[in-house]
Image (cartoon, rainbow, N blue to C red; front, side, top):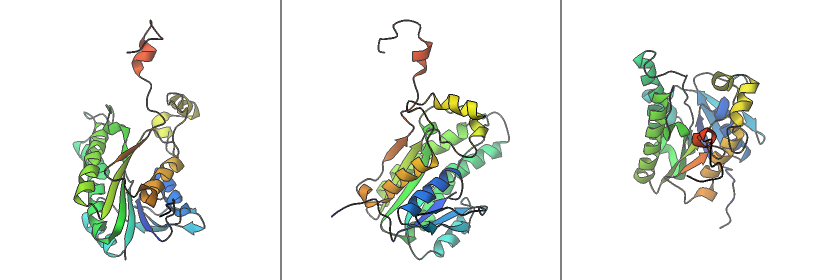
Amino acid sequence: MALALDLTGKVAVVTGGARGVGRGITGALLEAGAEVIAVGRRAPDDPPSAGGRTARFAALDVRDAEAALAFADGLDHLDVLVNNAGGTPYLPLADGDVRTHAKIIELNLTAPLIMSRAVRPRLREGGSIIMIGSVSATRPSPGSAAYGAAKAGLASLTASLAVEWAPHVRVNALTLGMVRTERSDLHYGDEGGVAAVARTVPLGRLATPADVGAACAFLASDLASYISGSTLTLHGGGERPAFLDAATVNKGGTA
């Protein structure tokens, strides 16, 4: 059987799918031929369009279990769920209200669990769930400890659901490094700051939402039909070890 990155006839839901990384995911799935429903709390001024198709927007707070079930009940069927909604402000754990940290965990871990469980009965045979994770799950995450912990939990959830829901549904995760979006200034500063951060990435740039979208389209396609319980890392090569810049001798040696 010939395999191709063709999602024609498939229906996909992307949480947080109208802005930032989610918009890139929605665009890639549309370009591959899918019908896409972008969900979020606020409707965009201009819904994502690509491949001659425009995404449908559905207002939904993905942290609300009852609302998620009502949304799922309104679907005839579903082929792809991308649990993309998430994020965090810079907030050291000792600062802020403890409820803020709890809400960060709720958005980044509990909401994907709620959405996955809600749509599970609507997913057709061979369906695909994609969790959008972060390198913060696998390294220290100072200033966003609750976020890093939630993303670590998301990796565990991915592995568990891939076993629980096999063979009917495939479940995978993308572990993202730094992605440039319209809100990059909140994390990296002005253009000079973004450029300085990009120089720390081996590939010399931050990822784009389109990069993330392309990986999601692959995982949702028949090309990935035997991939489940896996994590694909998109970080441009990772981070240069700090000791290489700190060392003053034996620059050509290995550790």
